[in-house]
Amino acid sequence: MKLNHFKPYVFFDSDRSFVNTDFQASSRRLELIRPMRLPGGTLRCGLMCGGGDAIVRAMKLPQEVGMMVLPNAVLFPGTLMPLYVFEPRYRKMLADCLEGERMFAVGLSRPGAGGGPTEPCAVAGVGLVRTCIGQADGTSNLVLQGLERVRIVGFETEHAEWGYPVARIAPLQSVGGAEAGTVREPLVGMVRKLAKARARLGVELPKSVVDSLIALENAELLADVVSYTLLEDFQEKQLLLETLDVNERMMKLVECLQRQVGQLELWKALQGKLPNKHVGHN
Image 1: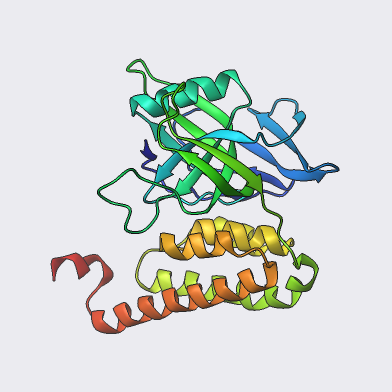
Image 2 (image 1 turned 60 degrees about the vertical axis):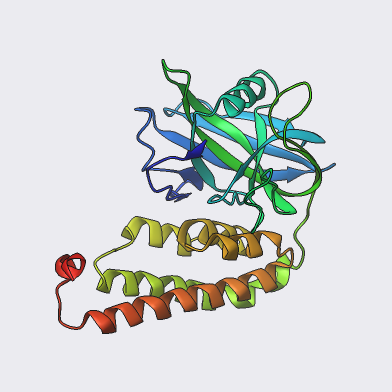
């Protein structure tokens, strides 16, 4: 299993629905309504595909889910992750998932776990399969919507009965969201600064992506979507996933983006007057 080959830019459109305009595996337009928390720890999610009627369901996270452990993927709540499933164990997991609650976890593999069975970091993301396209060769392309942070309280690399990785999970709740509004403007400013730094190197972010990111008013959602969309270092993403205080998470994110901007500015300085299109010829 691996991340799909296209860049998963994720954002809201004017009616506050999630839109992933770069998902090309299907000709149908995919739109997702933001999850809303209900009493009792349930999640309410809506799906509109191809402009059809919204399907609204209330669901509770299971105590045990199938899990993909990857070296290059961190799933945040409120984001869409495109995945290509080809390994036999994950094909089996996906088939079981689609027949059941349509949920599984994605966890970043632990640093230094090479050589032995791959184990996930202690905090992961649980997502809901929103669309899945099976291929004739048994592989599948899917889009997973992040629902919630979870702590991994138990993990089996190969479940005795099911034959794929399984995790026992406990939901994690963010704290301090009301106070995070004071950090929103510095984060929005850093997003704009990063976009300008990338543009100077000829690797522009689409204006629609930048505009949609900075339009997010919910501080927690803003931090998670920006982390997923703009951060390049997966260990930094994992650090932010594990940070439950929203105010602290946003401050850490500003620092991460500042380092990214610094790297881009250094590359531009080293490039000098060489045109962007000729950089690869050095």
